[in-house]
Image 1 (spheres, rainbow, N blue to C red):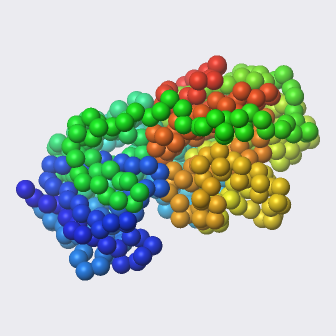
Image 2: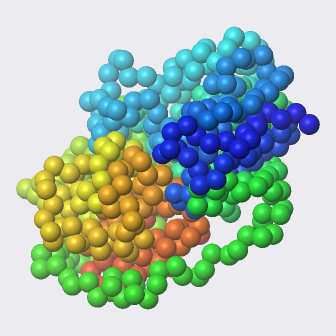
Image 3: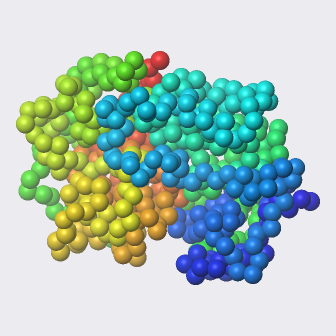
Length: 494
């Protein structure tokens, strides 16, 4: 059997990239593998070893990419990382409110269609067969309506579609994707699974998926490689892995931490209003594209809302209006905590009472500062921390880091953490000021099954307290906490 990739007793040259034990791994022709494991167990480091980013002592990985004629490893293995799927090449210039700022768009701003044509041209010759593949991908992903949309305006789910499409044009021998299904609505997840199944059957393509959410393993996956505490376990069949898989406990948050949340003292300066959010006939347009049309929505104190809809339906846009990150919010009839938008309150007055996490916020954090300072930035509503935290501030940060099981990460820098650990840090940041309104946009992205249950436990416990209101976005119904009592579904406009 053809061994496409083989690593034998692999040890990284650099100590900081080493696993707990030497790595042994094979990818054979016809195999499609899922790499699974807890957050922070070393999945991404293992993939970096597979693709050659982390050089090995003594023996490099062995590759046999036939029938591909490409000589470079980078041409034969394409790897879409978690962060790639949130934006890609322009992250250095990205800032939190960028997606909502129309003035960022000029004649040089690329459209989806233009960038995809550029990716298509770079990937190989313009042949009828490759054009058919391009058409096939567009149809399966229902991307035709996105082609004239500016890249800067894409939702996180649409960005993932864009990145996947541009990568598939290259027709690689091995395709590695980090959590490819998160951020995608149910229909698009099914489309992607079907697309990958079809491509793997029709072409010489081996697929490796890096998955935190083990109930997302597609049927076409043949084998599983589990990571445990920086150890690469032996490859097993999908059936063997699923048979041995242990169920997640009904609750992960222990009684000590549960009571600590319930016993938190209330702040002296809080809003106590009957109506927390009120929108009257709110419409948002970008050029000829309508995102929201005459939306009426009222969120009352103590309600827990699930906000759902297709990718690109306007969920994150709606939340950007509530958080005052969208400049158009001041032209809309919006009241927050009983105060009409534009009546004199500053954006910072509003944010003091809101805890917020989102894909856009995750993407905006490019500063490699310590985890505790990331959490502390939530007290100042800044991306990064520009004011030295007080001793009292640090105690609040340590409290919420303990709640989310992050005690040992206090001094680790943000960009050195796994994507799941980063998301937990940003969740601690959202809770750290004990907000009256909690806005969670896809909060469980990149989290393993146990941490997903932990975060749901924290949300459910937090919402048992007085004067707490929740708005949560997720594309997985099973991710919604039990406390949800209202829902709103947004339809995508043509």
